[in-house]
Length: 261
Length: 261
DNA sequence: AAGTGGTCTAGACCACTGA
DNA sequence: CAGTGGTCTAGACCACTTC
Image: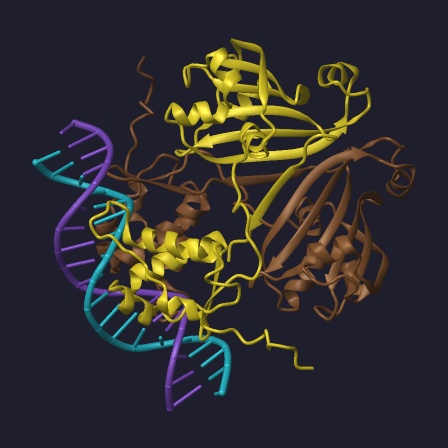
């Protein structure tokens, strides 16, 4: 019954005692954040292996010359990221599996760029119009208000991947077509000081109409992924509504979920 | 330019001053949690309207007879849920848009039940087998290890919605087919003391093969939504791997994302 | 019984925002 | 400038887990 090495027995990380955390009290970076970053790096580099116990918070705080709440704040941020698990009466240990992305409001442009696919964009349309009923409802504005309507075709390796149709409240952002072609919409919004905070998404599928097929270089009836998304800024105001269609043969959504305790 | 009521000016919630928060120090429920629940209820009932400022933390803590860190902990939990926004130098205010589900590891069964669709399940297969290479890789076990293979057909209103194929490490859970038909897999796991913590998902689409079409009462070539998911428990160990296909005409994924600051 | 994280307190100083 | 949240401290007691 006993297995080699008795992997069920969690050991306090031996490396932790000799790990030198360099905390700079003169830095504007908060102490708990400095500690969290260095713990995260230690986990990522395998210095703290999955299953390792972190050692109790009191010792750790004394050793680091920090108060316990500060150490707890650092640990808590990594628990929120899914890297550590706390167990009362047991200790804090490194999670067993590799966590990749904690979950993001994914930008197609960034996704493709991260995958080394060198995305390109054609802006097919970029003009102001009156909001139709469905767009107005999604953006929480009155029907007929002015919005910016955007239609883009995103490609990689010269092949279409997605057709993106977006609506933004007018005056929220200056949308230069040339810039839109060289970067993503979300990146432009960030640069303009709009910080995205949350989004409501619906992901579905359907068969391509002949028009859609022609646009995406697919055959009519091919399976398409569809996404509708309303994005909100940090005050909860809708700032963007999008209807996207993706060639299912060339794209899929990939993400990590964390369950709140 | 000025609009009626000047909605850009955030007011401290007038109701807050007369709101009586009932804190029970004898309760085993933490004080910060009691406060968070009552704040959330006040927001949900519109007593705290979107845009309302919460009043500063010092006053609030004195008024409630709590320390400031405790009040902060309550507020922070609602910020994490996306209900409140903090702004340094300004205050804490209620988010403008309605947040629905903060984001969950969605269970199809629960989703359908919540939608009042009265889901039913046919267990088509429930037996142990040796893990194939792809299943073993997804579950982080060695190829050939024993796993439980599960195939289920989920219906609403007598119509198929999804075909669910799942694999679990053997001995993790007793999977009674009768019980599986009357509830969801995730609910059974929770009952067995397995707390799901995170999951890695891929959502895509493709056209139905003739076999799939027959199984789901679709026509061959119809668009299907596909999902692959590996779920991890709170120590980060993989506990379930699933390959699901959904009739796109009857189901779509719907969820809320929060961006971490 | 010993050790762990969970909660809570009563202060303090700082950085940022807005008028 | 006054007011806000952001950070930090040095303690305390409790509930839970394990042995």
